[in-house]
Length: 79
Image 1: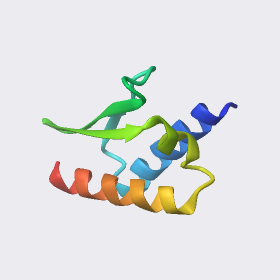
Image 2: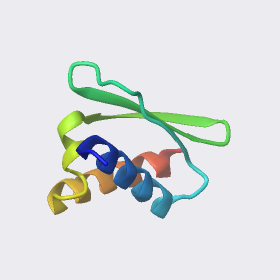
Image 3: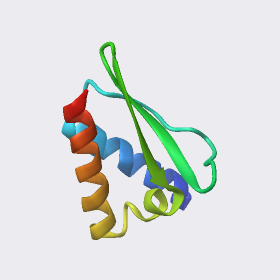
């Protein structure tokens, strides 16, 4: 598994640990090194942006993991 797949898997694990009912759509390619990620819960949808580097470093960098987790918690709470 390459770095991108590991980061994507970790991202999905973090989302599931926050709320298992949230559906996630991650684009296959970034735009300007940023991913526009869709989070959907029932009829509600929220978009967040994450840099490609943040996703790649997510499994190995505790600081980035904490930052992404906080961003996801805020986004899911807004759904």
